[in-house]
Length: 115
Length: 116
Image (tube, rainbow over all chains, first blue to last red; front, side, top):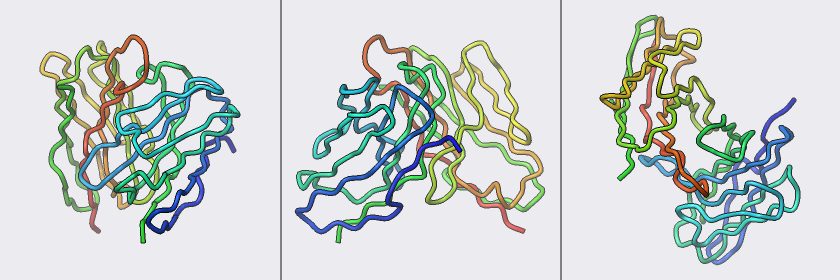
């Protein structure tokens, strides 16, 4: 089955710890994205990557880091510098490099909670 | 400022009834408008995508309309089913030459509950 797989589904982090969220896709998509979803707010773009070994900051990149060593994988690290990391994180990919003109497919999300 | 506003915030209807969700946007320059369905704790799934020249697009019991002049869209759900209970998100994209930041502007969603 083709799709986007995020893991884990639930993640708990102690304050001061870094954690990494996994995102893998087998759709052969060039572009991948990370969004954050908070209650009562629309999705906000954290980072995006249009090609392997290249990525760009989105609107709320502070406290996050990413890598794109393989086309299929786009992991997101939530660092201790992120002051309010509790949220639902969504990974997406699209067929084209222009996010506005191409269909975006989303993973099932990872819910991160700081304990 | 590019914004997408949805109404109502939440809605409760009885199974079998129809409903209409609204989306108003101030995004410019407009590229396309999408409706997504998001089940609780899951990722959004695309329902429809419409460009400037399209007024109506259907996907089964879901029909989206677009009025680019008034910058309004609606999503009409016919003969609702319990499985329609979800959040429905309106997403508007703007042309952006260089970079993908802010190219998709998400509404906050309408939470629909279908009761038996």
